[in-house]
Image 1: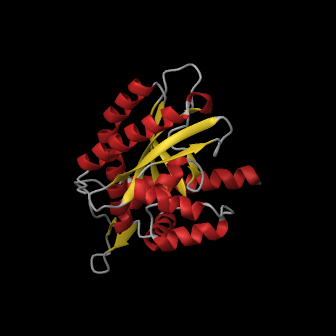
Image 2: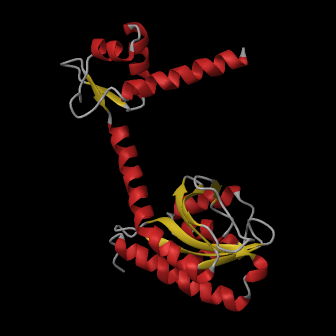
Image 3: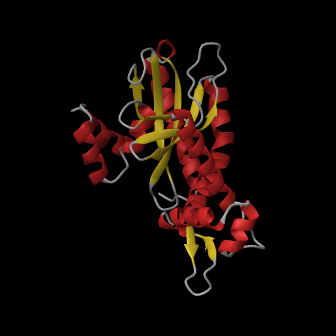
Length: 247
């Protein structure tokens, strides 16, 4: 029964995607009959799928022509995807330079609700190195990359997060990060791992991404941490400027 339900769910998702793929530059608006014909489904089934997509602003229906078109949610998701791609393209050559200089792993993170997600990586050149998978979600409240993002979010958001995280020292640490625009972590998210990170500001002065250098704690001496903090801060500043941020 469980497998049957799972297969049915996958079919429903695929059919919804088939509907979205009906639309293109030449077919920006389609009728129910046209969509049902293109995806080879009964009109009743197609209508139910369209209704669900409409409720979630993925599809919009013109009440006069009764034709369907892509909704504002699709536009918004495309905008977010475009911004992520833009940040990655700008950041990657700078990340490679930092990686080549330090031999350590360099990651680009962005914020996703109460998490950070790895958008891009320049993998370390040493045999023992720190590695995060692209697309992996990590907490905002632990590790240099998370805190570099969290420190610059709206205060209401920070306050809500602090109510569910048992880290009384975090609020003061975030205040320091906002002033210094750089932070570090030692054995914080994982034992034996250290990192330094700095926020990346967009054209509106918001922080949606950050740059980090991470590796085994045994290679992050105090002198190295100071050097890496300066390097990651300068590199993040270069990326911010390329994104249109003016301090």
